[in-house]
Image 1 (cartoon, rainbow, N blue to C red):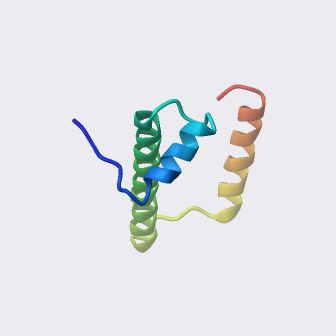
Image 2 (image 1 turned 90 degrees about the horizontal axis):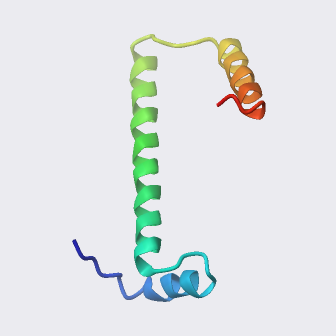
Image 3 (image 1 turned 60 degrees about the horizontal axis):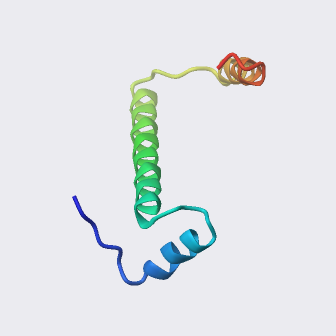
Length: 80
């Protein structure tokens, strides 16, 4: 597959390469696609969350915070 960069974005892509943030145009485009994929994944997760809330499937805030604190602790200890 080949893709062309819109002319208004070419200077930005060139700056990213010149600044050694990326090695090539392909790397810039790949990162952009990864970010788009992450955004869409997040959008789907948020939509699912609202569907669950609408269906009465919720979790109390104190449980959410407790789980978040435990997960942060595991991450800080390098367990995740």
